[in-house]
Image (cartoon, rainbow, N blue to C red):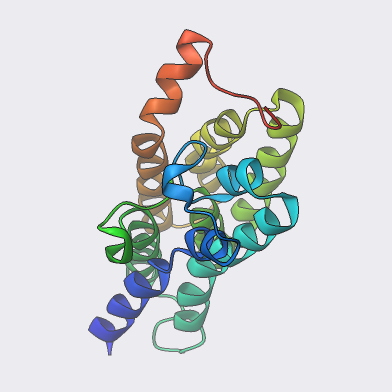
Length: 195
């Protein structure tokens, strides 16, 4: 049962919604804009409505596997297993086998995992992400700052040590997927939303 849940989490997280939405519009996101299949590139290349669909679907990829697992009484307080399932959903998104293991940057899927795994910390992260993006107009800045604060939020909100460890791992994934963005931020070439 545990193995099946882990496989499901990875494969469900691997569904490249942004890429599929692009294909339905006759656009190959891998060759347009930044080449990423996430919400920001969907908005740049296709439009706001499609970007919203991508965002919600990518959030669901992280939320649903963890939420389903929590419905089982024997697993609801197994924060290690819940964390592993969430981690696999994020990894599936970032390295989807459906696109030769080249996926998104994991932000929306990680937010979905957080909402199911540590709900209050997830809500705080979403609010911070939205506020920072609105102020800076740079998507990567919102992701980097809001996720840098996730472990601190989890710690001060009194979540368990297991949740603290796994949320720190989520943050590490986000940063590892944003290395090119960080380089552009330092060089002043990171594009703003709408440009």
